[in-house]
Structures are given as structure tokens and as C-alpha cells.
Length: 543
Image (tube, rainbow, N blue to C red; front, side, top):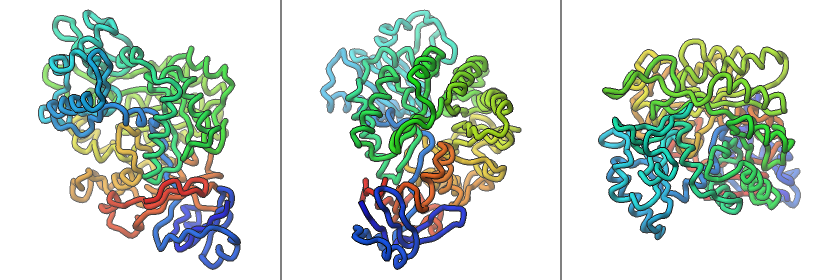
């Protein structure tokens, strides 16, 4: 297969900051880059694609996504942007009717956020029981760290009366020790484990549904944490689904699979299969071992060093939740590392990040001079000394840049202005030399990388507030933000020799935009359209 893309406003994103007009592709690999005249001279019998001056960049690469969860979320009730409990109920009602769901069946939804409700209060089982009590209802908050369920689900799970609490989560109860229907952290898994499983065929369907959405945003590669979707079943079924799709040549984008295996038993079971980080093909590879340490800022479950500043009246002093002990984290990461797996962990609150940094640094100090590329994702509440230690130990900052656009509305209230000034400090990561690998955490946030770029260079909400940006001294440049979605994630997966820039010998993975991000008003970046996505030289999406 030979193809030449001409008349491009091309940015190679290489060290030389090269510009170009044309790219020649042979069998999915870039053969030459240069002017129209230079490239066309070597492109004999090639199909010509005229980009008519549109901007061509390396394909976007999301470093932290939940691909399977997003694909599955397309099948459940969409509760994103509900402005009230009544709107949530209305959507549930319509979903049940549209899908002809009978009483006694399971009904799932995802995306609600009490911070967007007029009441600002979380729903409970009583809010759902009156109208939906004859269904088994499970509604997951946007952060995926909190769920609300109907009474019959609590009873089926055996956690309705005097439930036994677990480490790393809470089953909220009333004054009579009856569960309220709200579950946080690892307590949500009690319910997820009893929901009917998907099976390999449906997992494959969900994966493809997500991929076909993601490519419309110019995304050509991703690092995905899919083992966290307990409804999918055993992690082996997820592996099987990806490997079958890869063999069948059906994956329209490149996937590195993060390995969230929260117990030593599961990790040992995976290790016994013989996989190591980097194994796989150009389209599907085994990624790093992944740990999840804490919850979300919006749900007040991110683990903080000091309590939240806005705990609700009557609530005990709350500093969030650690979902894993330091000893458990040490045991898991040591076993994974010793068996050929790269390490990455979530860390939203400063207490969570400090715990991960302490554990990771011990291994790094034992292997000085080795190219380990450990990473921490989210990195939101970065109080004193945290970013400095990222730089000291060469830890990659897996920044969910888009979170700021949503969290501007709550961050100062949640943690106070002193801590807020040290949080979401994206530019400080860059200034200290930390490699930034940007992600979206989809379906927690909008997956479009252009929205993440917008949020990081403007530090504004989606409605362009506040004027001038939130703590504008921490804005990234457009160039740094694009690198965060191209070269950064490629480095994080040891694939900088294959992707991330437009250079001879690399994968022919591109995104074509209707405008030049370097030339437009930063506030207009979010309005940019993807007109073409190219993976391995094939046009997988065209507007």
C-alpha cells in the first residue's frame, strides 16, 4: 500500500521542530517527509490525498483511558450533565422504556454528578426505590468511585442491614445501621461482582464501539485500564477479546493494556501466563501494571494529607480514602516489577501521591541508571515537594489535563485556596523537566484530546471562565500541550522510536485538523474539528 498526503500544514513535533508539506507512506510506515515536490518525486504509483492546507499532526495518544468502560457506558443509561435528581429519574425512565427492560432485570447508568444538581446532594436508595424499586438499579457516579443502588440490590449483595465495612471503601448507613444505597471506593465492587457478566463477544463489541468513537477525535493510540470493569468478568476474557480482535485485524487504533490486578492472587495468575510489558503486536501490546490508590476530588474520596475544607455539616472530619495500604502497594508493585512489568499508579490526592512516590522511589534507588519510566496518573493535589520528587526520580506525570475544566468550579471550596494554588500545576511539571503524558480518563471526562489541550493552555471552564484563566501562571504552551498528547505518551510506553512524531520509519499515524492550533486564539481550540484520522496509513475516519 502506497499513499502520499500532500498540501499539508504539517508539524512533525520532532526535536528540530520540522515543518513539511507532504508525507509518503508505504505499508503503514512513513517513507519520506518534506515538500510536495520532494515527496511526490519518490512516490511512484501512490494514491494521492490532497489535504488542501489543513493542519497535520502526529496522531493523538491518550495515556489514560478506560476503553472498555467507555464502550460499555454507551450501552447503559447516560446520566452525564443531569442538572437535578428529577432529570436523572427522567433519563432512567426513558432508558427503561426505550430498551423494553422488564421488572426484575438489571438497569445500569453512569455519569451523574451531584455537584451539577440544583440540590448538590447525592441520591440514595429511597430516591430510587419509589419508582424503580422493581428493577435492580446501579448508577455509577462520573468519577467511577461512587455508586448508588436500589434497596433490592443491597439485599441481594447482603449489605442492607448492619453491613460489614471493608478496607478502602464505605457502605454508607443511616442512624439505624441500614445501608443508604451509597457505596464508595472498593465497596462498589461488592455490587459490581454480582451484576451479570458480559462475555467475550460482548466485550469485543464494546471495545470496537469505543475505538470507533475515539478515532473521530484524532486518537490513534491509547493506554487503557480495562481490568477495572468487573462486570466484564475474569481479566482473561478481556485479554482474549483483545487478542482475537488483533488477530482478526479489526482494531482501528493502537492499544496498550494497563494491568489493574488488585490482589496478589490475581497478579500471580497473570504472571503465570508469561506476559511482560511490551509483548504484543503493533496494534495490541501488554502495558504496565496499574494500581489505583484513591478516589476523586468531586466525591471527596481523593486521599489528602489534611482534611477537606468543605466537609458537609454534621459529617466527621474527612481526608478522603486510601484504597490500598502502603504494604499492599509495596507487595504488589515489587512482585510486578520483578516479573517484567512496568509500573504506573493513579494518585489524585497528595496523600495518595506521596504514598506511591515513597514506594516507587525505593525500587528506583535500587536500580539507578536503568530506564524504568514509572508513572503516576492524575497528579491533581500536588502540595509541597511532590512535583519535585517526580523530577528527582524521573517519574512520568500522567496528567489528566481536561480535569481542570471541570474542577475549577469546586477545587478552592474542596481544599482551600492555599492548596488550590499548588494543584493542577501543569507548567511546574514541565519546568522541572518531568515528561508529561496526557490523558482524559474517559469515560470520567470527555475523551477528545483537543479539549484537554484547550483546558491546559487556557485554564478555563468549557464556557471560557474565568477570564484570563484559573491561576494562569500554570498554563501550558500550545506546543507543550500537543507534545503531551503525542511524544509524551509514546515515551511512556517505550515507543518513541515508533510513534509520536512525523519522521521516516515511524508508524503513519496522523490527525488532520481544520485549523492551525498554533495560530488560533487558544479559546477557539475547543471548537477545532478533526477532519481526518490516519492509522498505519489507512484513513480510519474522515469528516
